[in-house]
Image (tube, rainbow, N blue to C red):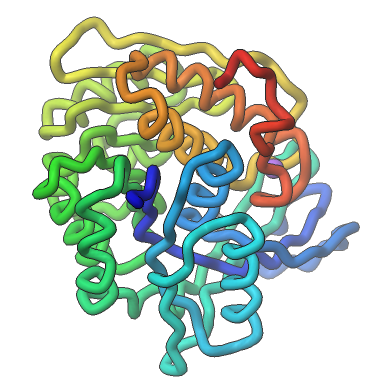
Amino acid sequence: EAFDVMVVGSCMTDLVSQAPRLPKAGETIHGHKFFIGFGGKGANQCIQAARLGAKTAMVCKVGKDFFGDNYIQNFKDNGVYTDFVGQTSDSATGAASIIVNSAGENAIVIVAGANMLLGSEELQKALSAISHTKVLVCQLEISPQTSLNALRMAQDYKVKTVFNPAPAIPDMDPDFYRVSDVFCCNESEAELLTGFSVTNVEEARRAGQELLKRGCGSVIVTLGPQGCVVLKAQESPPKHVPATAVTAVDTTGAGDSFIGALAFYMAHYPTMPLEEMARRANQVAAVSVQAVGTQTSYPFKNDLPVELF
Ligand code: RIB
Ligand code: NA
């Protein structure tokens, strides 16, 4: 039976320190809490889609180490299909050092490790499943070439694609736009890709229009507490989807919660207007920012109002 959502992407072990503020260069400061969690943008998005009820599979690579073994168990615990999860002894499981300040903002350094060894061999193994999935999701924490190949593969089989250019790279292959049914980025990624400043709804519209022109089916520019802007190739004008105000404890992985939820809605409600999917995905992500951690803060279907389903 076919999957609803497949993610070709990253897994990281998140090493998180909570501190009053982010340290400056050369500075040591006291934090008050440390924890280890399951992260990585690809896996986060997959786990959020699974928790909403999507039948999911992850295509990724972890190390043959303690963190990799644990990560595979985490997928199983969340009902994610793991036959396309590779394990290598040539590199360590990806790791992310994360500092979260008292405003819930973060700074992250990732060492992608095994994620960078995900390649054509794994894609070939997953090809038949990719050709039958409803939605395929990719990001940029693995080799960009692998992401692009996966998106092309999906497009060849008329599978709906979601591309999240995170973290953004300045010299991104322009083909990424053409293979994206939904191109979803945050304000800083939109800035880096367009060279425009993106701090408010009006600026997000302008950047979104520029990204749309490059060949995407639709563009979503997320704006944190300001919601998001949704643009469709066949339709104008752009629509602003506001978010409900919440008090943020930890915004790490909120964008991934949004994208995982979006992929779930695309798979389960294919005829729903994109702005309605975005509105619902905003609500899912808003729950995630109110608790610490990434996946630890992602809601399950049962935690959410029935109107979202
Ligand atoms: O988007 C949040 C994620 O980015 C974290 O889980 C961390 O692993 C980094 O990849
Ligand atoms: Na959170």
